[in-house]
Length: 272
Image 1 (spheres, rainbow, N blue to C red):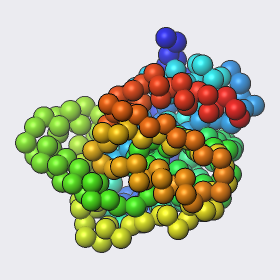
Image 2: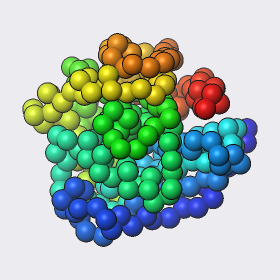
Image 3: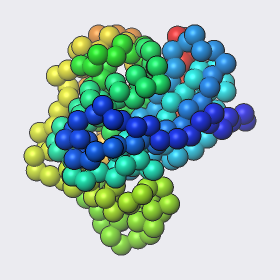
Image 4: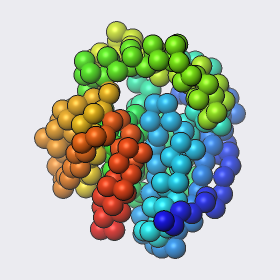
C-alpha cells in the first residue's frame, strides 16, 4: 500500500482575516500538510476534518489518495485544532458558516487551489456543503463523510455521551497528543452542540444551490447521526448524487472501513 508523506508541513499565516471571525485572535496560523500530486492539471483534493479532528488525525489516508490518483492534496487544521492557533473565544452557532465562507477561501487562495474536490468529515462535511452552496470558490465535487445538515436527537445524545467519556476516561489524554489545548478543543465543540440555540441549526435550505457531483458516505452505527442526513442531501441537491452506506461502521468511515471508503473516493475522484 503506497502512502506518501506530505511534501510540506507548516503554518499558514492568515493575516487577512478579521480576528473577530476566528475567536478574537490576531496573528492566526493554521497547520497544514501539502502533498504534491503527479497530475497538477486536475482538481486538487482538500480535506476538512471533524469536530475533534486535525490534519494529523487523517493519518496516511490523504497521502494514499494522492499517490493513487495523482492529485495534489491539502490538509489543514482549523483554528483551535492540532498545531493551529488556539481560539480565544467560544464557538457561536454560525461557526461552520464562518469556516466555510471566511476562512476556507483564504486558505485556498494561499495555496492557489482552484476548483477543488472538497473531502469533509462530520463538521468538515457541513463546511464543504456550505462553501459549495454559498461560497465564491467554484467546487468540482464533494465527498461527504458523516455529514450534518440538521440536528437530530441522535446527534445530541452522542455529544452528551462524548462529554461523559471526556470527563471519565483517557479521551482527554489522547486528544492532548494531537491538539495544543485539548480542553479548549473539546469544549468549544461540545458546548456549542449542547447549547439550546444550536437545536435550530439547519442548512437544508441551501442544498438546492449545490450543482457539483456529491458522494455521501455514512456508517450505520454512527453515534452522532442517522441515514436521514444523507437522505436530506440527496432530496435537495440538483446534481449527480452517490451514496455509500456501511454496516459495522461508526462516525469515522475512513478509519472503520478504510478500504471500502478509499475505493469509493478514488473512483469518484478519477472521474474529474
